[in-house]
Length: 287
Ligand SMILES: [Ca+2]
Image 1 (cartoon, rainbow, N blue to C red):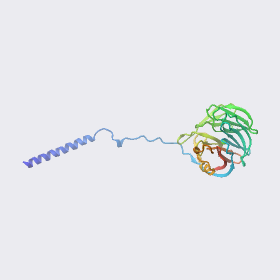
Image 2: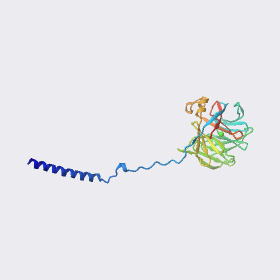
Image 3: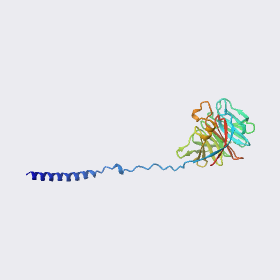
Image 4: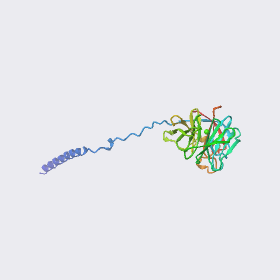
């Protein structure tokens, strides 16, 4: 009897197991999607090339007026031309390279904050910061010969390409304006692999590329004037440290950011400095 019962209970267990197997298989046929088979979207492929690293050599050092809050810098006919900022201290000046001595200067009214400047056809064009006014000076005597207006709320850096003045306003756009009508003829968005590049500051056109300081950084950016892409980047933090200038945020009363690039086309030399820096440095870029 017990054997029959034992056989019976084994039989029930086998049936139970078969039922469980069939049931569990049917459970595994649950049409619910399995997480492991879920596909995820591929991240967008970044097609913008990373800027090349531009290396440089320090060729020479010259004195620079530590009271000059440099906003614009150019070189022409053996002299530096510099625009300085700060209300009550702004001017436009012609400077001797080797001594840093100011040869000629014109002070601006205290209500103007001088910004970027550029030399074109024996005239100097200079922006102001938030005053919406631009000034035109004769290159020889730095006397004011005219004024102009511009539409950006702020004026920052300036250069030219021989036919247009090119300026920026603290954002990522380069504005090309006619030097007679002062109407905008073209604008160029500056970008790199991360998107728009802001805080574009002092400018210089060298061999068809615009080289730009970027405010609050030690970078000089090399910008393709056809596309606006940053194709190269030089890190000048070594020069800042060599001169004894602390990082920008740590200088409430001392030298400020790297700002100022001048190119002498006659000698193929490049000069750089910064706001209130005690030195101006000739550098040679490898790219
Ligand atoms: Ca310049």
